[in-house]
Each structure stands twice: as C-alpha cells, then as structure tokens.
Image 1 (cartoon, helix red, strand yellow):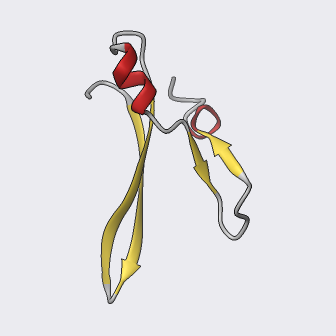
Image 2 (cartoon, helix red, strand yellow):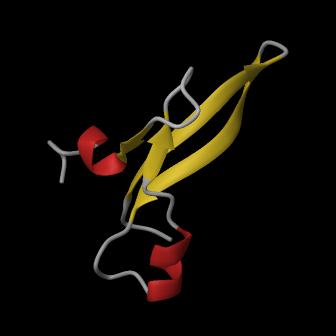
Length: 62
C-alpha cells in the first residue's frame, strides 16, 4: 500500500525502538481489500478504550 498517510508506533524494548503498529488513512485509489486492512484510529495510553481517529492527527495535512 502506497500513497497514504500513516502513523507508526514504536515502543522502547531493552534500549531499542521496535515497530509495534502501523495505522493508515485509506485513500480513494486503494482497492477495497486494502482499505479494509487500514487501522484508522490509534489507541491512547493509559486508557484502553480511548482512541484518536487518524483524521484528527492529520487534519491539517489532508
């Protein structure tokens, strides 16, 4: 998948950052199955049930 806005989450593990998750906003050019794979909201710690939609993170860039 290329040509989309993404948010990468890295976690510190034993002094090194490791990629934990990638969240992406789908674009119109993507196939439906690619759009379905996109995670469009990111969790915010320390709250398990609180998420932020990626549109709010990237709203000035869209």
